[in-house]
Amino acid sequence: MIYQIVTYMKKFLIILLISQSVLTAFCQQPAESETAKRLYKIGLVNIKTIDTTIVVNLKYATNDNFTGENMYGDFCEACLQPDAAEMLVNAQKKLKETNKNWNIVIYDAARPRSVQQKMWEVVKDTDWKNYVASPSRISMHSYGVAVDAGIVDEKGNAVDMGAEFDEFTEKSQPRHEQRLLKEKKLTRQQVNNRLILRNAMKSAGFRSIQNEWWHFEAMTREQAMQKYKPID
Ligand SMILES: [Zn+2]
Picture 1 (cartoon, rainbow, N blue to C red):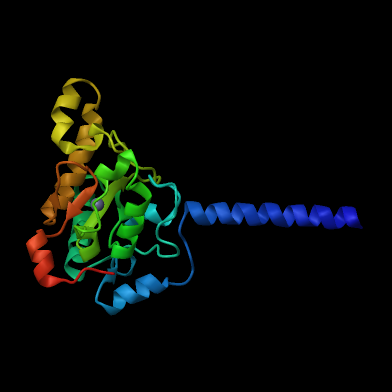
Picture 2: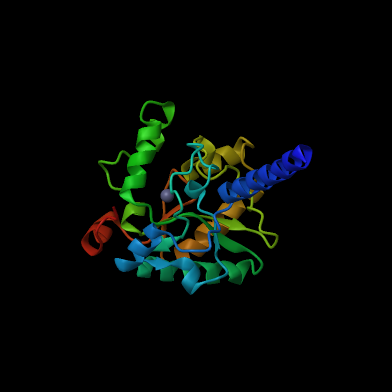
């Protein structure tokens, strides 16, 4: 009898461990998070409600990010201000014009300032501090107008961009692409994949930046400050 109970408990424990690891690897909660509900109230849009083909994989809602910790708790919805959300849907359409089986994947979208603060606490005493915006300068993600995006292929695998999302090396920086190509540290294919992403995003009106291949902004900082309040 005791043996049976122990076996049963072992099984239960294994199931529990598996379900927990699945939860931390993929954010797929059935109910909407309190944070998302709060963002909807102030006008932000959940991308999934306007386009079901765009893939959402918020890295800070899992342990798979540079901090090694889930920064978002149960918040795993990709939310943007309505104009930025509409632009992203257009970018997905533009991508499909050139690569019809590929989809945009969102690694991060609206990011509350409280999370920015939390990230800063994690990195402020490490070598990573130069890569994370100090909370005193409000991130464009906290205005809900910036999106971190990549591309996934027809199987759902990330298309090779030559550097991972949030990889803190020069390979992540578009400003070095041409030199890295000559030095054979990036392949022609990897640079082309980035161009496909950038072209789709830019033709929908997004602006890219020079130091992160995945980061795009729907407007200038001045426009964002005029139009929207930062999200706490
Ligand atoms: Zn970003």
